[in-house]
Length: 79
Image (tube, rainbow, N blue to C red):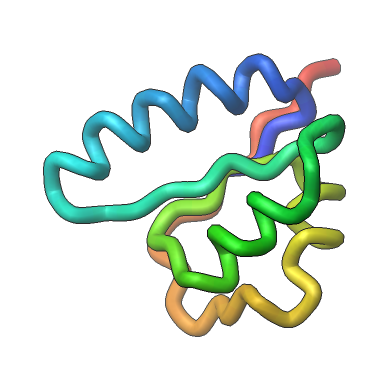
């Protein structure tokens, strides 16, 4: 899930975290303004769901994200 608004990401991430944990899926939320370290570490460990702004997903990836299988890709743009 990509969104341009970080506050929307936090809401979406909270839902994915709640429902995902119930079925064993891990999530990470990546967006600008938050420290890179924690976001990069979470992605390096491996996650099932990445919720983030397009720019931060691209920068945070740095080779740690292997998108072999993508079931859903959602991009929400406000304009």
